[in-house]
Amino acid sequence: MRRLSRPQIRLEARQRSGELSSYRDLELKNSILSKGLLHPPVVQFDGAKGDYVLVAGGRRLAAIDWIAEDQGYFLCDGETVLPGEVPALIISEDLSALTRMEAEFEENYIRLDPPWQDRVRALAAIHSARVAANPLHTAADTGREIAASGGIAGSTAVPNTISKQVIAATLVAEHLHDPAIRNARNANEAHQLTIDRIERAFLAENIRRREATARLSQSPDGTRERAGEIPPDPPHRIICGDATLLLPTLPDNVYDLVLADPPYAIGAGSAGFRSRTIHHHNYTDDPAATKQFLQFLLGESFRLTKTRANLFLFTDIDLFEWLKLSASAAGWSVFRTPIIWRKSESEGLAPWGRQGFRRTFEMILFATKGGKGLLTSPLDILDFSRVSRAVRDYGAQKPVELMKLLIEVSTLPGDSVLDPCCGSGATVLAAKSCLRKALGIDLDKAATDAALIKLNELEMPAPIEAPEVEPMETMPDVSAL
Image 1 (cartoon, one colour):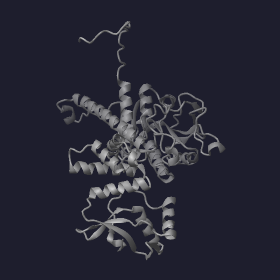
Image 2 (cartoon, one colour):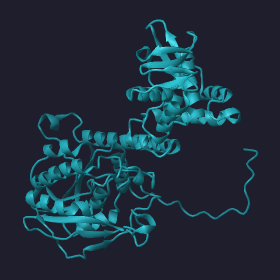
Image 3 (cartoon, one colour):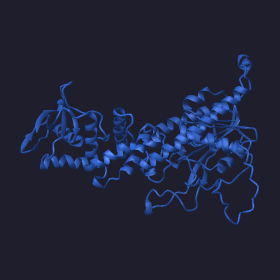
Image 4 (spheres, one colour):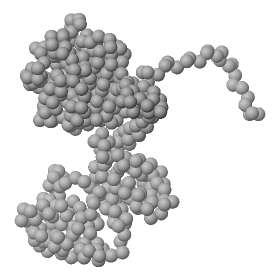
């Protein structure tokens, strides 16, 4: 063991992404202060840079830094370690970067399993490094090597299982920039979400290309474009983009209805919501950002709608009074009380658990422009079952039949509907089913991909049923074929 000054130790990209802050990390710091440091961090000398690279002991080094910040000292091997000093075990210079990476992975898993995101990154990095060294190296090879080293589950590790984990980690690691993947509850859920999104993106891209080809075929030689005659947009469009950037580019006085389900300012992306379902809310939902967006949306909606138009906004009870005042300030005439969507007669969120009630409803703000109002006078409590988890593909998905009712009571066939927070497309699907035009916008590409696929399926003709065939009493002998 040697004592090094803290600046001599260099931390490369670590497999653990979390900072030293949890209760267990505090326990580690207090343990070092009271009992001393039993196992110093392990470093390797880098002759090219003249410093030492940390190989293992990231949490211990962070705890030592924490103690130094408090101007504390501790014992290691019977010696006092002062602030700014780090006791370290120095290993030989011929240890490769890949071996250091594997050593760190093994220590992290054996001592305290890191978050699944860090584990996925580490597995993918190890496999990538091995493939770089040998292009013929397979995931099965990596699995066997990790199992042999006991780096995942000790001597009972199953190479085939680890190989599957390596394959999954390699795929998921490429998509951890996506909040929906990164915030999954575990690696298996992240893997399934990744596969679903890749398949959905492929199908949606095929639809977009087919639509682009169809528009081009309207003027194959480009004469209409040169003459300034652009083929018209389809009556039902779904755009992936930022509404704050796209809405200002749209012309005034176009839409008869704005129907949107914007953020509620309730922290819908928090762990409490995430623990309940695989379909998470992957958007900013804090009060300040939500109010800023809603003020923008109310003003733009007033500009984009015709002189007589309507507005429906889904919202939360804590936001309703503020939203009423903001809508009035933007020029809308607001219905005094909320419209209630009762989404269940039994299932609901219980914020207080057994000590409180289950919430089975959501609120809708209704407002009008130019005194248009509704075509009929429905009840202010709308009973439509929520979209079941079995078929849900978006965290805040609303039932198409509910959106259809709101559209039908406030517009006529041929009218135009705008949904600037369309999610997976319930508003656009509802508008199409009741012969209204619609534009949906959403920032979530996976959601708009799902919406485009569903819209395309709605446009496809029903499959031709095969004629009924009498069942065979016995299976034919096909051995001679």
